[in-house]
Amino acid sequence: MSIHRAVKMYDYHVWANRRVFNHLKQQPEKIFNNQIQGVFPSISAVLVHMYMVEMAWLETMKGNLYEAISQKIKQKTVELNGQPLEVVEAAFETLAEDFHRFLAGEEDLERVIEVEHPHYGRSKFALADIIHHLANHGTYHRGHISAMSHQQGEKGASTDYIFFVEE
Image (tube, rainbow, N blue to C red; front, side, top):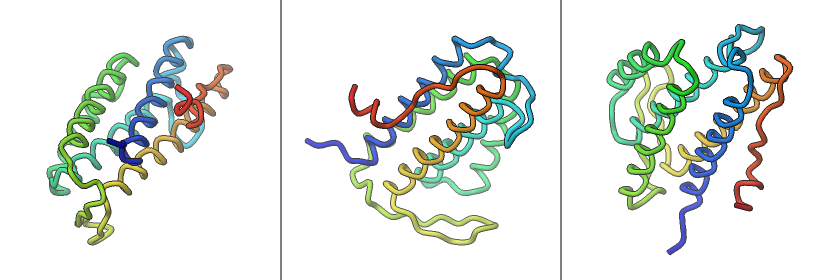
């Protein structure tokens, strides 16, 4: 049985996030919460944002409504803001497990869902497209984390897809 390309993309996303966390653990602890000038005020803020977006899309794919998802995001943001790297990493691992359970139980990743958003209106998305969006979103922000590491005199983590497929 072949693996759906969307699942492979999500697996890459998780692999790349793990590489970033492992790399950050080797850096001076202060760079995680250091306030710097950029798109985000800290590496921690980037990771919390990435987590919230991924959680929101998983909840959306599960069929939860915007209001319930917004409440969950607010609660989880309060829980994660200011936490050490290990706590944020554990939240990502739990979310990846939840995501993998969802994917394992989904028979048709090409299934289209309809989403209602108070600002963007009604939209339709294939589940596979949402998963590809998450991987793309993660790549974009892992680039921010790399740039923010460089701003603080450290190197970024290599998360190129080509190295994922080699493993």
